[in-house]
Length: 198
Image 1 (tube, rainbow, N blue to C red):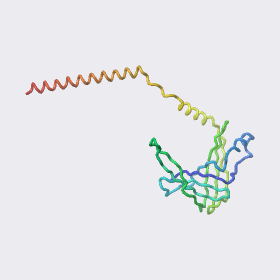
Image 2 (image 1 turned 180 degrees about the vertical axis):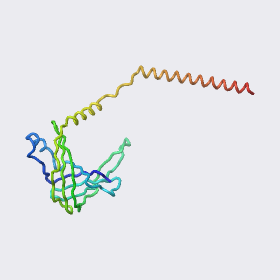
Image 3 (image 1 turned 90 degrees about the vertical axis):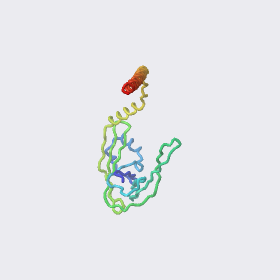
Image 4 (image 1 turned 30 degrees about the vertical axis):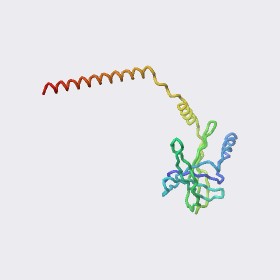
């Protein structure tokens, strides 16, 4: 069962081009809109086997299709699991209802763009495709978070303090020796006590 499904919309989307500056239009024109991954929680996939999931496509001619995908798990030479997505069939959906699907385009300069569209279907045929929301968001926080994560990943692991390690190792050996001596002293005392009480 999936709570969020991926959708590809090959149909031309109602994008508010008139609201964009020349720079934004140039940047957004680089997007392959018919390949952009959108996500929806408008419906759930019940009854799928554990190794299967589905994605959806709204075709250029307004048809609605479900693409079944099998997750194939294999092991490489090192014994690590490798996951592969294998197409397992496609079928046209006789769906009637409305779905909402969203995506984001991460900007190179100062802004990211969030968008939500709605699609109304009747028996698997697209009747309406509308823009629900288009937001322009400052991306400074996202970029700062990515920079911080990248910085942390690039940090070399700190070398252990050799002096502290040597002191710790020496103390453990001394404590071990004291425990060993005390154990033998205790053992001898018990033997003497047993011999005296006989």
